[in-house]
Length: 93
Image 1 (cartoon, rainbow, N blue to C red):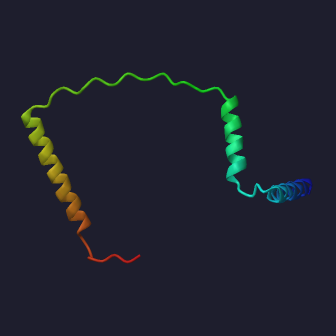
Image 2 (cartoon, rainbow, N blue to C red):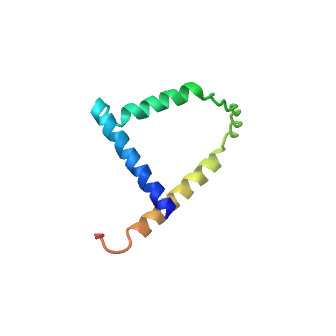
Image 3 (cartoon, rainbow, N blue to C red):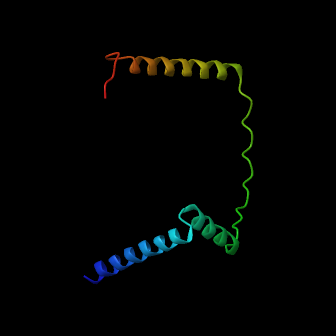
């Protein structure tokens, strides 16, 4: 019972604050949010993340590897097209 009473008081307080802000001409939510964000950014330290080194470059591929890769991609594409084109031509949701 006490939690419900506390929640109703919180809601009433928030509504009252919004009405006061409307009366003062600050009816938009972006102004108070921008002000809070600006204050928070002024008082919070920035966190620096150490940069990672880039991975070593891959070794150069031979022509047989390139041909095998192209054949695999072609086979995968044909399989995907075969699966997606199977069934009715129209789909209704």
